Image (cartoon, rainbow over the protein chains, first blue to last red):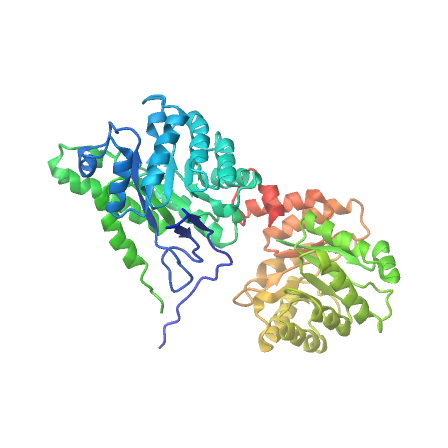
Length: 313
Length: 264
C-alpha cells in the first residue's frame, strides 16, 4: 500500500533578508518548518559569522583564544582570519565602547569598523557593547561610517531601537531586534520598528537565546512558535531568527571549566557545547549564527549541508 | 475572523440612490471606509428595488465600482443567479457567492457556478420549508450542501456554512441552536467547512443593536465562527474581535494587537 505523506499547508513564509553588497548572504525565505524540504522551500542554509572583538577579550576560555592567538589585538587581522576559517560573515563586536571596558568613543568604534569593512569581502554584522545606552550612541555613528554596506546592526532593544532604526533607514542597514525570550515583546518591537518605516525584510529577530543547559528548551519553544506564526501569516513575526550562540556557549561552565577531567577534554567539550546548541537552534528555526570557535563553523557546515539535502518523497 | 462589510447594499438609501443615479462615489466611499475599518470582504447587493431584468447589469457595475480603488474581494449577494454570474465574471480575486440554500434546485445552480469561477460560496442551512428549529436539523441540511460541493469539486474549505441566526426578539430559542451548529459543523468534512453568519440579523428590530451584534459575534467565535457579514462601522466590535482572536490563540499577543488585526 502506498504511504500517503501528510503535508502541512502553510499560507505564508519567512521574509528573506539580504546582507552585504557584492558577496551577499541571504537568510530566511522558508515556506515551511526547518528542513522539511518535502513540504516547502528552504532556500538558504543557516549562515554563520565568527566574532571579532575590537579589544582583546579578557574572559574567553583558552581553547577559543588559541586559534586567534596571534591576531586578537588586531581586529583587521582577526576578521581576515575568520574568513580563512570559513565564516560566511564577520561579526564585529564593539566591546571597547562598554563603559566597563575602555568606554571608547563612537568615533573610535567607527574607525575600527571602517578598517574591518575595508579588509573583508563578506557582509558585516556590527554588535554593540552590551550597554543599551552606549549602543544608542555608538551604533548610529558606526552605521554612518559604513553607509551603503548593507550591514546587520544591533542588538536594538525596546529602550534604544529608535536611534538604531534611524541609522538603518538612512544608511541602508538591517537591524537586529532583540527581546528577552518573549514572543509578545518580539512582535511588539518589530511593530515599533516598522512603524518607523524600516521594511520588514530589513529586520531579524534576536530572541536572546541561551546555551544548552541554560534554558535552551524555552528558547526552542519560543522560536518554534514564532516560526509557525510566520508561516500562518503573522507579518510581525516573519523575520529570520538570529542566534548569538558563541557568547552563551562559551559562558557555560561546561565550556569554561579547564580542570574537570571526568567531563572530558575541555577543548572538545567546549566546541561541542557551541555546536550542539546551534544544531538545536537550527531545528527551531535559527537562520543566522554568531559563533566563536572556527572548529564549530567547520562541524556545523557539514551538519547544515546534510540538512539541506532534499528529503522530498 | 474575516469581517465581510455589509454596507454596499441597495437596502441602504445612499446606495439605492447611487445605483439609481449611476453615481460611483458612495460605493467607492463605503468600499474604502469598510476596508479601513477592518473588513476583508465586501458584500455587494443591488437591493430589492432594482428590477430583476436590470440586476445583472447593476451587479456588474457595483462589483467593478467597488473594486476600482479598493483591493478587497466581494461577496456577491443576490437571489438572482444571472446577477451573481454577471458580478463574478468581472470580479478580481476570489469572489464569494452569497448564497445557496440546501434546496436541490438552488444547489444545482450555484455550486457549479462556484466551481466554474473557483469562487467561495455561502450555504444557508435552510430549505423551502424554512429555517430549522434545532441544531440537528441545521446540521442535516449543512451535510446536504457539503455533499453537493464535493460532487462538483468545490473544496469544502471554500464553503462557508451559515447556520442562520434569527432576530433575538422573535426567535430567541435559535441562539443556542446556532452556536451548537457552529460547534458541530466542523466535523462534517476534512478539510472542515468554514462558517459565516449575517450578524445584523440577530438584532433586527431590537434596541441596542450594536451591543447584541457584537456579543453574539464573540460568543460565536468561541464556537468556531470563521467569518461574519457585519456592520464594521462599530469600532468596538472590531476591537473585540481583535481581542477574541488573541484569547482564542488565533493571533500571537502583542501590545498593539488591535492595530495588527487591522493591518492584515
